[in-house]
Image (tube, rainbow, N blue to C red):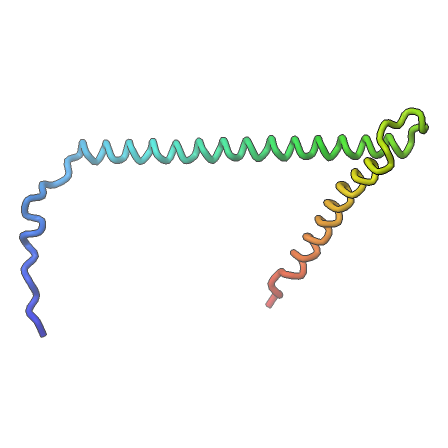
Length: 112
């Protein structure tokens, strides 16, 4: 078995870390953490506004569709093809949501 080597020369020229350097490192760490939190907040704000915009757009589609179901023919401005496209958008997303929730229930781990 080989003898252990002497590694005492590795750290011979290194002086101990000063308290000023430690404080500076802690300050830099805090700044980096604050930056990370700031970015997370901004991303959260963007996601919330995107969800609100999507909900408003979906609500407008539903209102337009209801208007075209209940209004007289002379007040309608969309062609039957356009109304059919709105129906496809509304019901395909609703159907997709139902399928997704169903798959989530199926894929749950079985209770022990």
